[in-house]
Image (cartoon, rainbow over all chains, first blue to last red; front, side):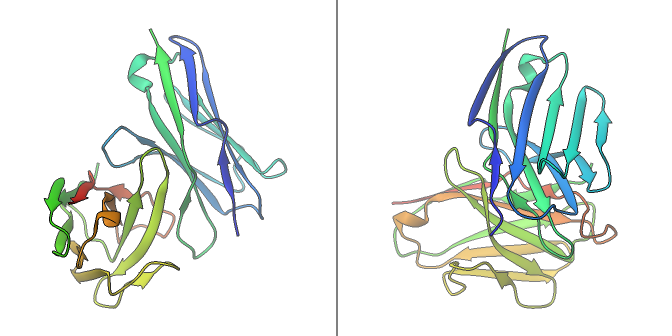
Length: 111
Length: 118
């Protein structure tokens, strides 16, 4: 079965730096990959979607890459702010199947 | 963006009682809704897929008689935890997809329901 790993359980960075989170999977590449943000005690909020034939997607300070050779997606937050502190989840989907979520990385941006 | 309302946000009940959680899409129609369970510092575990007008599809290991799902309309799905026990205590979250989007469309999540069974 598909195994999804997200770099570390927790990541601390200094304000203003770029945060880079990774999402690795083990089986064949999904058709789509999404990233969500989840705050404590709240439901996740959609951030970005990237398709298997896309290398990179951007939205404001966010950037997602998708490398099917490495079986990896990277999620970048540039000029990070304390308000970016949250848990970030990647989710993979194969054609006709539901999204499967990774364990998440808890990001803390220190002022 | 689209809003999904989940109610109640917190519920405390005695062991053996049943608890109903509602999930409503407020400004869009959802033929498909999803129910998840999340333990502290763990990811979302898909429990079942709720399909409007038909039976829910449960994930392996999830007891359908324990977790009753009803999706009677395009804007409402309910999850009933029957004869709840302390081990059912968890954070339950629903999500919905706009019927106008394909299966890859973003999922809109409710705020979650914290169930505590005494």
